[in-house]
Image 1 (cartoon, rainbow, N blue to C red):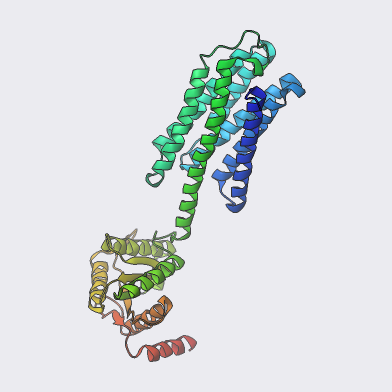
Image 2 (cartoon, rainbow, N blue to C red; image 1 turned 45 degrees about the horizontal axis):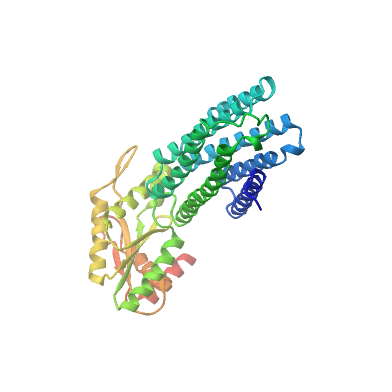
Length: 403
């Protein structure tokens, strides 16, 4: 198979449709992702544009050119909007639409009013240069810290494509080309080959961005939306893995179950928004206290938080629990009505080499119940550890709930 313009067109078509199908399958898996929807739609529009280009000899010339360029313009607009949305940057739709409308007006003028293939190719190059430059600027200027590498790689691809179209602006079109894009000459033919290669590179760049999106979705699925801590399922899974690792190493593990005292009264008196502020304040204090620590910290549910202390003895865990209560007393939550001192009750359980993390949580829960029964507030002990009376305490709690 010779490497001529029809061959390049077919290769470009097969590449575009393969990429579009791949992103469509991703969209089926990741439903509800607006960024992926826009990118997938842009790729199908690109496929439509290349298809119309390939079928130009068999279609009415003017409608095929206008429809093909309109598809390319739509592809560029959706790609630009998708990148802006991925980076969480506001981009009014009328900006790219206005640019696309100006592009189509020029294509129409130099197709119908003053037919000139060379000028149309230059108009297309300018439009693509502007869009690619805009996308590259967004990727470099607004890349989140955790996505910087993937965004820079994607920006490099778009900048390379922009450079290709900048070069094409100065390339001559064969004098005998007429309206046949397949006879524009060797220099233009080389840019078509480079364009197919860059399209493949852009595919890989978008896959990098999608991979980052998957990582972000996984992180979101493991994070509590209010406090930013690990959610219940994540802290239980990570805690179980840590428990098994420490047992293999012969090291101790302690678990603290922390409950904000009188939280219902806070909600009833100041409202649920104030309750959310208290929980966020409490979580921030815990995070600050655990900076640089190997401790797992998560929201267990409601106003309860769980800490898995790797390598901590019972004495060290009790000291940590006492320090948490002290910090809460010293740093009240700031609500609209003024400072509110928050206290907490804490249940402690130590790993004895038997059972799993759920066993430890049950023991810490029983100890927490005894701490609350002993009295709450800054002057109360507020801390109990699981001991020999765990079973009876657990039974008392169940009877209390029943009654």
